[in-house]
Length: 361
Image 1 (cartoon, rainbow, N blue to C red):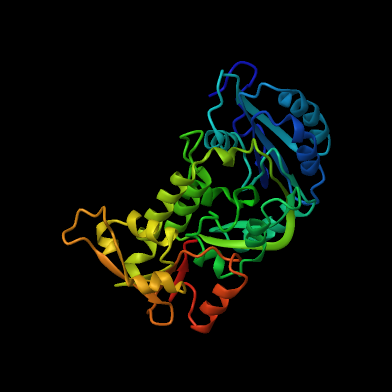
Image 2: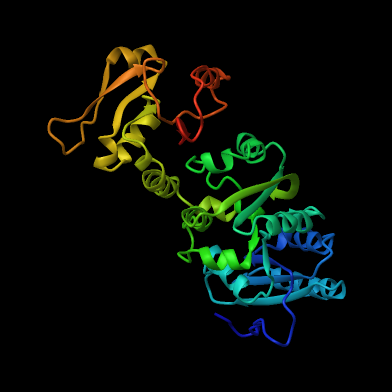
């Protein structure tokens, strides 16, 4: 969708393809754009780069800032491709990313949010990793701004072990490498994508990530902090409802993990564990042999009865102490919130993550 003032810029014989295209969707990003675009200019990548901007109906001075930086960037050898529309309402992040990709030419795609900023070595280091891992999404560690915002989430982003990038894909945190750090080949993006264009409230990054995993894609993280990841109330991620994310997560768990197990135990007989049980399809619920917990009151009660079930008799699932339960486990306990007690209990069972247990917390 190209509106007046946004001439289409389509790759073709008139210009040689870049090695890396920085994909930048923009909607009312005036407060952050200068720092964001400065970080593009400061990249130390030795190959050819372009910046592909798609302006999604911004009503502030975003376009004025972009035009100012276009001259600076092109003076440094970074081609700037600008598309967009000026309709009354934005079309959403998924649409904007797809349009920015479509008008770009790079063999590799470096995704950047307009409220973030890259460290100078980001493109170089992630390009090196992407060449080695052509069917992977490449992420990186991040520095959060403000520093004390989302401390647990930021720790999770930065400290997952390499194997956990695949075993923890069912958790409430979403993709194990976060979207603002994504870097991948154009060929792989085309194989997996495009992004869902449902607009506001659609977790387009999570849906793409799940499809990426379905198609056998890998997940790799460059273990350096290569992105300033900004937290603020107007970020697009806040428009996605928790219930929407929950539904997608449960369905993906049922699709990818539960078919491997004949039976399993839900670790947490409290609110989150019971919610997961109720959210499962009838077939998956029948695989639940027990809940387990450490709470003596829950264990003493002996069982959980699913009162809203259409089955007769209604399912009554035993509640056991975790040492009396048998793996595999789907864990519905929030990590880092028990003072280390849960982690100690889990380690004491000497289980293997991915085979004997999965985190859904």
